[in-house]
Image 1 (cartoon, rainbow, N blue to C red):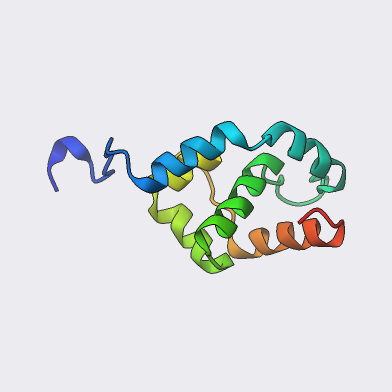
Image 2 (image 1 turned 135 degrees about the vertical axis):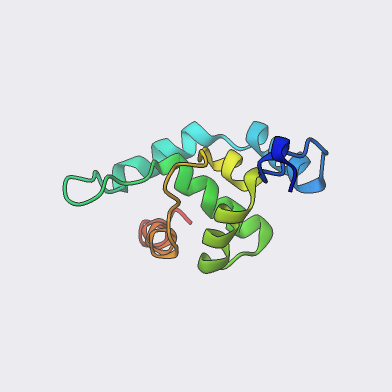
Length: 114
């Protein structure tokens, strides 16, 4: 590893995944979908504050698009800067764990929003 890159691998190459996620950023009506889900989302009155609905929704979509299990999605968020950027996570932000990802999917399913 060279000192100037700090091991972050900040590639600017337009990969297929990067192009696809840029298109989905433009095409998917994120705010409208968040508006449908937000009334059912936990408010975080107890325990840790919840992750933003839009972040969890973007994670859910990426799981479907890239065929990732809950543990694989959590790991990808730890490993892939592209995925972190798409969901709005900085490198010092906590990452939703596989249980959080599972609970969000169950929330969508229980309210027929999946």
